[in-house]
Length: 111
Image 1 (cartoon, one colour):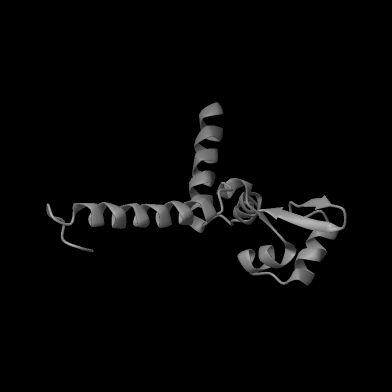
Image 2 (cartoon, one colour):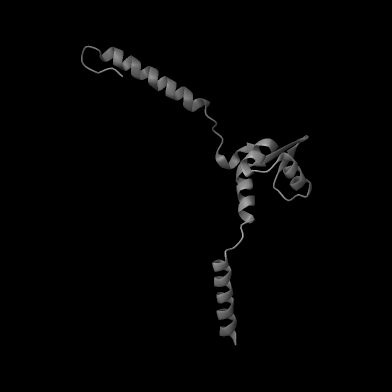
């Protein structure tokens, strides 16, 4: 970066415009797809959720994983995969205990 003063103002403006142009180019070349709409191939989906393509094919054949099919290709929504993984979350002992306590209180109040 050059020091800006009265004598080199045109040069400084020129350098600034070049930098701005390169930033604009980078931004325009980035993937503008929102994360919720990002689609994965079977290989990318496998890398994302740490499963082999063979395992994913098995889940697809059982309709156990969300997918889209166009022609012979399978596609997986990033957000749907995240939601699918979260659906498999197991409750902690504390959460189960709190639910049991709540059920007992509700049941006891009805008597």
